[in-house]
Length: 237
Image 1 (spheres, helix red, strand yellow):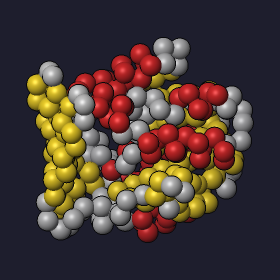
Image 2 (spheres, rainbow, N blue to C red):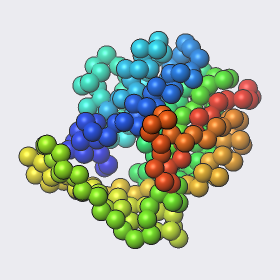
Image 3 (cartoon, helix red, strand yellow):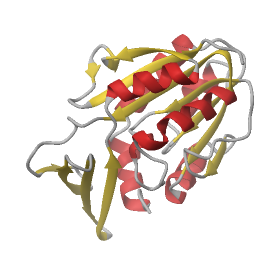
Image 4 (tube, helix red, strand yellow):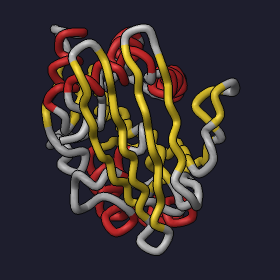
């Protein structure tokens, strides 16, 4: 299971800047009232700004430790454990969010380009006309040709991330090791890389009008190989 307790807590404390920026962009674009479905919600960073803008909120994450952490942070909000590819059976949602390379993660066999079109159609069925889907994906340029390791030392932990890429299979692997006062924990995350051109084509086929984003905020551009999209429902079928 990805994002066990130690990594979940580290991620929530120090790696939420993109989620917070995505929340501000989202609420500026939403048309209310309605519910926002946050897929791969992590520790619930979108919860507070979404509810402050008078929208209902539902967070979904596959990691039980992330869900537990989010529920502790926002005890009166709705969270559930599950895959981002098993969408809640709601209809008429104002928005769906999947930020943080959610649809790339190989925890679900539907992840990656092969399952993207079907997933977007499912999202379209949950959204009302004019509803918004905010999405980012890791693409083929996300990793370097040779393995690279980044080490971050914080006050309470040390985290080492080694990234390797298999271009032929379009798979990126992150080996993440957290050392803290509780000991050492290592996770290996695999992501199926998706070309942004494939994403744009799938959006159109599913009934969305997408806009490519350079970042969620002007001062927080996406790193190389990370692409974001703000798509609005244009068809009422």
